[in-house]
Image 1 (cartoon, one colour):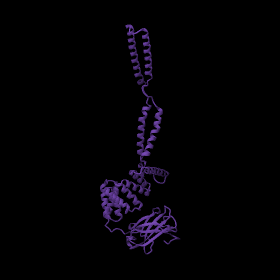
Image 2 (cartoon, rainbow, N blue to C red; image 1 turned 45 degrees about the vertical axis):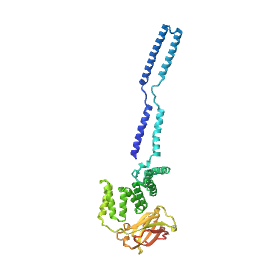
Image 3 (cartoon, rainbow, N blue to C red; image 1 turned 30 degrees about the horizontal axis):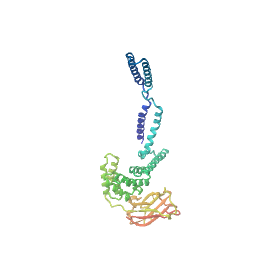
Image 4 (tube, rainbow, N blue to C red; image 1 turned 180 degrees about the horizontal axis):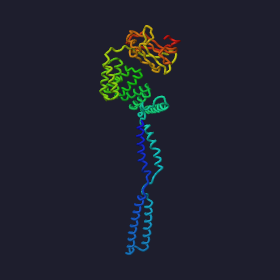
Length: 408
C-alpha cells in the first residue's frame, strides 16, 4: 500500500510541475524589446517614403500647399498612434502566482478525492498490512479498514451490478473475520458472475468456515461447480482434496492433490505442503470411512435464558453406559447456533476411546459461559439418544439448565 501512495504522490507532483511552470517563469527582457523596436523602425521608414511622395506631388503641382500641409499633419498623427500601440503591446504573459497557488492547493486534493470516490481503496489493504494485535495502532488500522469496507459497501448499494466490487467486499469481510457478511457478498458476486470458478471456490471456503470447517453440503456443491468451470482451479482442487480427506476417501484426495501439485511451481511453499500431504496419504493404508454422526444443534425457548455471543458451545458423544468420558468432542461458539455438526473418530480425546468402538452413543450439547470443559451450574444443556453410528440429521435441542454442582 505504501508503494502505491508513493507512486501516486510522484505522479501528482509531476503533473503539478507541468501546470505551474508556464505560470511562474519570467520572460527575458530582450525577447520583448527586440521585435517592438524593429516594428517601430519599419513605421518610420514608411513615414519617410510617404512624406517624399507628398513632396513630389507638391513640386509637380498636383497637390496644393494647403492640402500638402494637411496631409503631412494627418500622416504624423497616424505615425504617433501606431508607434504608441506597438510599444504597449505585450510580448508574452508574465508570471501568475495567484493562479499557480490555487492549482497547487486544489490539484492534489482533487486527485485524492476523485480516487476515493471512483477507485477502490480497500484493494490496497492486505491482512499483513495490519500491525500486531494488542496495540492502539492495530485498533486504529482496524477502524480505518472498517471505514473503507463500509464505504465500498455503500458504493455497491448504489451500484449493485458490480460483480468485481462484490468479490472485493467479500474478501475484505473475510480479512475482518465477518464470515457471514462475506458469504452474503460472495453469493451476490456468484449470482452476477456465475461463470467465474475462483469466485465459487472462495465462496465454498467461507461457507465451510461457517459450517465449522465441514466441506460437505453447500460448500462442496460450490467446489464441484468451480471445477466444472475450470478443472485447474487451484483453490477448488485444494478444497476438493480436503473434503475427500474428511470423508476418508484417500484415493480421491490423492488424485486432487496430484493434479494441484502439477499446477504449482516446484519450489513454492504451497507445493511443499501438497507434497507432504501426498506422502502422508500414500503411506497410510486404505481404510474404511471413519464412523460418524451428523445433525443439527438448536436453542429452544425452554432453555430459560439467552446465551451471550461469546459463550462456548460443546457438542460431544458419550457412551450409552453412562460414562462421562467423551468419545468425540466439537467446540464452537454460542453465536454459531443453530449449528450443523459432524462427530467422528478424528475428534476423539483418546485413541482407544472412539466412536467406532460403540454401536450406539448418547449425544449432548452444552453452552458454557466460563468455557470450561466440565459441566457447571448454570450451563445450558440438551441431550438425545441412544443414537446409532452412521446416523444423519440428528437434532439436539438445548432446552434445559444444569442446577447445582453436577458430578464429574
